[in-house]
Image 1 (cartoon, rainbow, N blue to C red):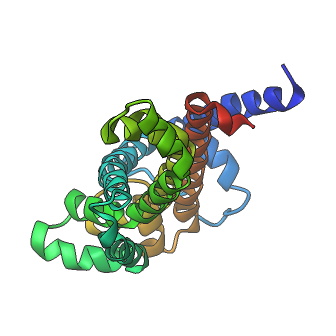
Image 2: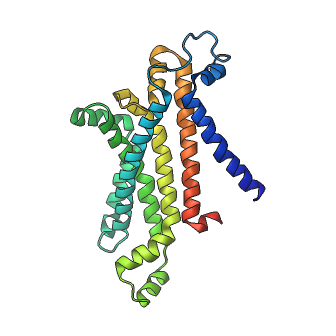
Length: 248
């Protein structure tokens, strides 16, 4: 095992252990935060267990990212086919609008229609996570040269067979990079769900803002950041395992 591989393995072991400790032990937060905020009486958010907030956060990200992946890759495939290519500018404009439209504004529009809590948050995260998936799917599929298509046709493959046996495997690294980017973005964005009662790691952040308690804010922010790093590292390893060329 090389030094670089050993360091990578050490991070994969250390970070989950640290994350698990921070979401399960309030005494660790007391030790870490007391020197920085000696004047605060309440240092640790205690209205809900931190591990429960992580589960809520992960659920919102998983559902919204799964929907964004299914729709985003589907749209990317559709507009790279001959029948759907005319819709490419429209799809690009729509997903770009979803990325630039503030998630808070999506929540404000969605709440009157579907109510407070989980559903409007999923809608906002879904729209916000589409752009990198659609763009990378299109880029990956369009990077497959015409000579490869001709070779596939020469082998007698149908259009569908060419897509799944040739194009998708060759574009998989780019597509997975877009999915990974989308998921990491949504982990940070999901904190806004706490403003409408969806739970998650935004809860201590909102509580800290309301009570002027920076320790609460720091808890939510640190855990969100660590969660994003862990998911990014895990998806990176999965990507390398699924796409050998990613190791180059």
